[in-house]
Amino acid sequence: MNVINSIAQMQSFSESVRRQGKTISFVPTMGYFHEGHLELMRQAGKMADCLVVSIYVNPTQFGPKEDLSRYPRDFKRDSQMAQSVNVDVIFYPPDMEMYPENYQTYVNVEKVTRNLCGLTRPGHFRGVTTVCCKLFNIVKPHVCVFGKKDFQQFISIKRMVDDLNMDLQIIGLPTVRESDGLAMSSRNKYLNRDERKSALSLFAALKLAQKLYSNGEKKPSIVINEVGKLITRAPYTAIDYIKICDTITLEDVDEIKSQAVIALAVKVGATRLIDNHVFGEKLNA
Ligand code: AMP
Image 1 (cartoon, rainbow, N blue to C red):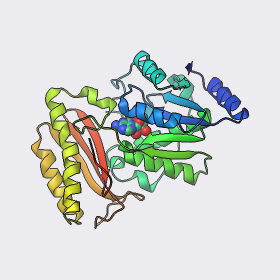
Image 2: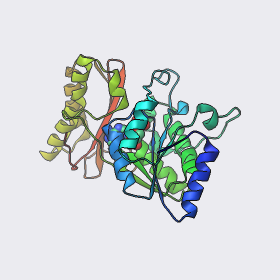
Image 3: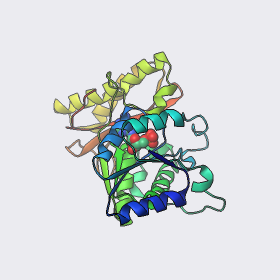
Image 4: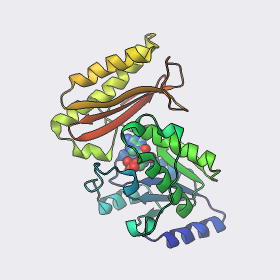
């Protein structure tokens, strides 16, 4: 496994792979790997000849009061885990490479970034789409794999790739959960024991929403109200949003049909967690 820090070296590596007629798959990450990341890597590894993973905690997607400085980092552990799933290259650039002095260009996807996390994290998706656009130009992948745990991120990147005619395929894979249902996240590390228990209310909420829908409830307001009560009963929780949206436009819907997603953002103690479920799809721990 190679570790590449410089943009120029990464670009010439990818160029040489392409010149040999080989394909590149890519998994962008912020590191501090868990099984969710590893599963994306395993799947991405099957999709091309060469698998590149980036580790970059992207400052432009964090708000001024968010957890950029304390975001968990452990490069040694990450590189061992990456090696265990046969990653070919880790791209691990420093901030000065990615955002040198006088940097001033951003990619802004409009409508699909407005709702959900766009409401409480202004500028977040502008940072995400900008860094992904840059990474695509650096790594030059044929296929790029994202987790649907970050549903709005996945939709926004697909929108950017379509709208800007980027020549690569975007694949979304299901959320990997702990055995008790908690969606895996690097931020779960912040939770103490009691908060970890309360965090299970997110998965319970998604299951309740699916059950209400399966029993015939189609009104978002009723489902949101029941789900809200369930989450509020768990200690240390504060709801940021519970919304039911169209899976393509991410606009709120007034009736739950097959193409609807329930998306949650909940603070558990000081840690903000997100999760989602597309109605009718499988929901297993
Ligand atoms: P992150 O390092 O949190 O920015 O995530 C990197 C990639 O892993 C993104 O495409 C995420 O959606 C994906 N990811 C994070 N957590 C999970 C999970 N529990 N299951 C599947 N994919 C995930």
